Image 1: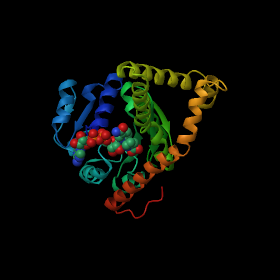
Image 2 (image 1 turned 90 degrees about the horizontal axis):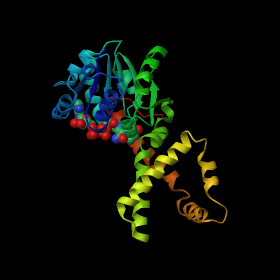
Image 3 (image 1 turned 60 degrees about the vertical axis):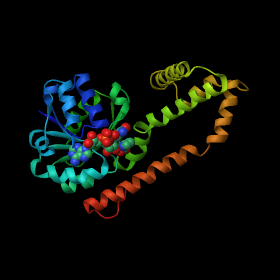
Length: 278
Ligand SMILES: NC(=O)C1=CN([C@@H]2O[C@H](COP(=O)(O)OP(=O)(O)OC[C@H]3O[C@@H](n4cnc5c(N)ncnc54)[C@H](O)[C@@H]3O)[C@@H](O)[C@H]2O)C=CC1
Ligand SMILES: O=C(O)[C@@H]1CCC=N1
């Protein structure tokens, strides 16, 4: 069965390349379209057998499973384009959170799901959030999770929790990279450590910490307690972070939720769906 990708920008490309690199998909199973076709052509050149096509309609007409990898406000246009070509057996997957299942289910006569990937899937790691519409049978869900499981850890979440879980798994890499960057800048500023060396150390530290938290038997709390000796150097640093960052993360999530609400409202207007309740 052919798998289609509409939108081969940053995330569409990550998904296609990861599915191919992991062995989940052969290039010859992949059909891709993009507004400016040259981006899809680049993938076709890199992966012989992959078919880049001129229109989203061609993807819809040939593929049983279609990932829509465009920005939220472009969805309505794409959905209208592909609608005549999907059948009840087609599965359409949105990779963006502000396009809700009800937008898709009310507009398309097929199965719909959301898979919110993460840049970490590009190294076959991290989570991929799975949210299912009612027309997805348990077998359909299992098949999609097999595919997604080749590039990350599929995690089923309710649509209600999509925003906050995506804040962690999809936005988290950017937030953590910001933390790393600030730590590196401080090391350069305070002690003159070469930037490259500080970056290498910080990156290894993040990798090791991730392993401790996923496979090393630690929780964030127990890890912190284990390394922060009472009255010691780490505790001095943690006390400062506690004072300075106390409400920062709550405000961080409030900021992402506010932007999400704005996007959902705009998508609602496009789909003519009234006020959202998620
Ligand atoms: N950046 C990230 O880490 C994550 C992004 N997402 C979601 O992925 C979606 C895409 O994001 P990015 O790849 O970062 O954006 P992007 O801007 O890099 O890619 C979007 C692509 O869609 C193409 N496009 C625009 N209109 C089109 C149309 N009518 N038909 C076909 N192609 C069209 C553009 O040319 C572009 O290549 C967004 O909805 C975002 O919410 C989801 C999880 C993580
Ligand atoms: O729709 C989402 O939740 C993702 C996370 C970052 C951008 N888009």
